[in-house]
Image (cartoon, rainbow, N blue to C red; front, side, top):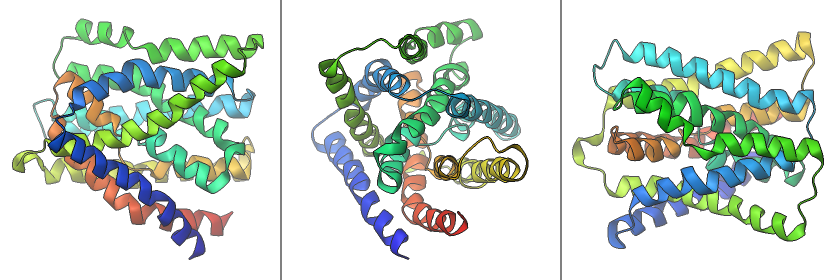
Length: 308
């Protein structure tokens, strides 16, 4: 019960940021399109680069982004297939994208920081990198396919800087290049902007929602993917690793499970806005999942701490 109440209190400021985003969109005429572009093309690449260069790289930690990237792609393709039986339009594209990713960066990192402190933040960032790589490759391609041809969608994927930031950061880390305190201070400040603007994007998207934006079928399937399929798949991997493979530590099990239960990604709104594929419907579903997570995450985390 103590863990539940503590985490509940630490999550509340994130919801306050969402509310401020709604105010900014409704009364200050802040455009979600500008925030989305800022996150995708400037802030996210810096966060990716920072995460790679500040984390000790070994087989266990390097396997995390590969693992989450693979799971994200598989779940994306699975729910795209499911969506083809329900919609003929681009709803299935944005459903597939959001099924493959959660709000691991804007929401997951503050939760990990609250639970485990700075010590394991780098490992959590590496986990986030797997999702960011998915978002900036197959995820973006699937969303873009809802509006563009295959070649046009592929060209848009190749313009995303987060992919290049990952590999540059990998080279810097493995080369043991020292960037200096000033550079690290500047780069580190982007992490706070990443969380604040990402959560505000939910409120900005909500501020432009119309009455017809709620689709119970779309939201229901998205909830099934995020709050049932993801923890079930990751929990199965943890179970087999405990009993057979022994690749990860107990702390990494906890981080992996936390990453599997975060709400739907705010970048669902960012990408849907950027590519014009049902951004208002995406905003409603992301908001509902974020509200649901206020209770769901503390309960789930309490269970995790009881098991480990």
